[in-house]
Image 1 (cartoon, rainbow, N blue to C red):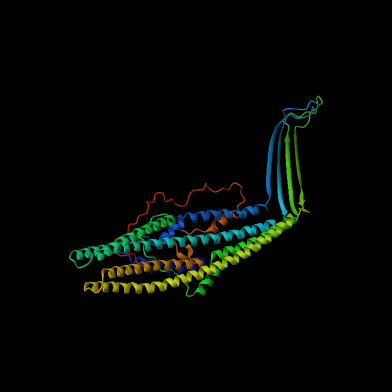
Image 2 (cartoon, rainbow, N blue to C red):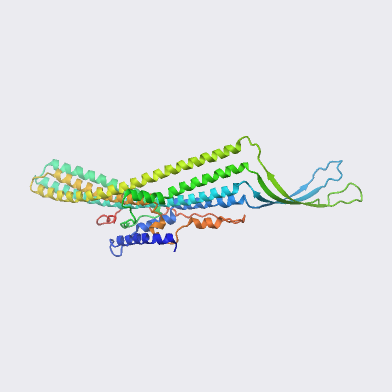
Length: 497
């Protein structure tokens, strides 16, 4: 076990313990989808992630490509020629010939071009690996958001269904009391209007639930079925300052920006090398065969039909004047390095703002949850009291309808605040660089390690070492049935832990 694995073990243990705690809230025998299960499916099948991994593998190849410019190069050529028309005064011209040759070129000195180009490619590989981590965290954040959206919208549909049922009962009771002269036609109309609005709200909630389920299918690749309450998130910071300190040390976007600075700095060395001399050792050879068609032009005198040659030497090239192109390339590389430095500052600013904003949103929603819970309790008591007072004639039907609406509104606000708090907390972990597969203990097989492919290809010298034909990795969703607004019977799903 590596040091990194040892550091991650307590975090994974807490995450899995939270999952187990969430599972205890379900009825025995229920088969529910967990948040970790949804994340594992997205980790394996999400096309954004699988495409990013393929892009990183392509990025890895820049290292052996740049290395190849500093290695020996062997080439050969062959040709066959048939002289269709031979000049009349040239009696020794061959009618046909075969020519073959070979050349070996060994770079000896290239002014540091290869060394700096390889260094830049290596830094860009590391930047790509950091960007892959950022993509992973981004996809996970979207999955968490979609997961919580489904739970929230399902709860809102259930609350609106209950509200419609209550209002229908109220309308029936109001109509009955109108028939016996206890209430007026106005009371009945108010009940009918409020029921119609509630049915409209229910249709809107059902549409939102369908949209959330389709977003879940797009990200995870499967339909959401009986989503379990999510577990407590591990390692949430105590203060915004602590969160920012962790983010500056672990956020993959900052790491990628830093590697881009290093790569652009190496590019300056590559540009400067264009003004240096290039030295290569050369070995070449050739073979000609005129296939018996070469003659001396003198009867009875034969000539050799085959010739061969070989040469070895050193080739030196030194650019003297290129119209300012070399210095322009250096200045261009320097400016791009300056651009990368400023972009690093921009990324750092963005990470700080994102971390602080996510922390503030998380804390605000935690307070909203506490306040809204009190409001739900208070509105429940208020509704009960208004109904009791209506029975003795001190409250109108409109008072009951208003109390029921206020009770529904606070329940919806509570569900929404619980969703917003959890998503904000996960976004905070993502900004801190702590919302990746290695942090969340994703199960289902070995985690994807981009370093494995890099180690495989960085020293590859064989020109025929192709990979297998590319195949689709991400799963399609054509066979997944369209989402509907059906919700299980019973109370809304339990809140996040």
